[in-house]
Amino acid sequence: MILRTFGWSFAVTIAGLVAAFFYGNTQAFLLVAVLAVLEISLSFDNAVVNAKVLERMSPFWQKIFLTVGIAIAVFGMRLVFPVAIVAITANMGPIEAINMALNDNERYKESMEYAYPMIAGFGGMFLLMLFLDWIFEERSAHWLPWLERPLARIGRLNQLSVVIAGGTLAAAATWLADDAHRTNVLISGLLGMVVYLLVNGLGELFDKTDEIDEQVEGLAGDQVQRGPSGLAVATGKAAFFLFLYLEVLDASFSFDGVIGAFAISTDPVIIALGLGIGAMYIRSITVFLVRQGTLQEYRFLEHGAHWAIGALATCMVISIGHHVPEWITGGLGAGLIVAALISSIVRKKPEGGAEEEESGKLESESSRV
Image (tube, rainbow, N blue to C red; front, side):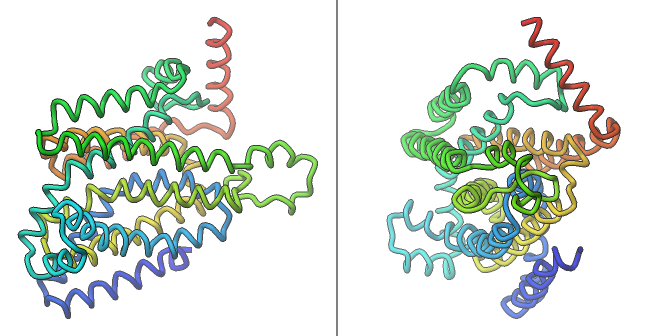
């Protein structure tokens, strides 16, 4: 199981470290190893959230996510995206931007740091919308009931997540962004909200898994594809838009890691190698969580990951005007997930007991309302 799931990650690690050694000897080898660990620590919450979506996809689309998706993550987000951002913000051609990345690392770093407020605006709003939609949704199980239940009640107000995200963006652009970035932060933040609404909306439009669940009792078991958790899985257009959703989600998570990597190295080749290895492990961890059914066994792990997303979104919004150290963003995410994991272990009950208890509480509360 381990080799089947992590085999490609091990192979990419060996190839990447060997390439780094021949590229820049021992120093490059060590830098790539450090960057890989940094990416894994910053993006572990990404793997947990990805697993929740991936368990609803067929084995075919899971393979697409692990193959085509990793190519997009490594070459697109870790190599092409930084150069494209520099080319756009510095108003230069792609060839000139590539030459600057390879031959003038300090100027390249300065250009990336200049572009960061726009990147943080887009990624911060996308992740904030994801967190708000989740926290305002009614659910049977609560990790922090004293907080999650009142928020779920407030979330009955239609489009509340859009209102809060829009207000947050306006406040960040007004009080955090400087004059040179204010307009660009507003535009990039609005784009982040639009992309989330578009991709998430298209996924829901084509998602037929609920209809399959309703009809499953009248069908033979082998007529419906099911995942390890027993859920009917999405195929066709629904799976395609879930795949797009995962890619945009991964991109939003990777923004912070790409910028943070410049604190370790300004060489784009070393950054791409290190973050690419880390991205490969994140995908393997995602698949491992799905195949092992870990999210079903540890019921609050998903909660911790979404609270970690909320923390990351907050850090990205703050970083529009103030630098937030990478150890804070990574530490918050890891701490919330570990706390959720411990809670899952401590409060673990016989299957069905906890859900019935939570459902009973929700029903009694609804009757009082």
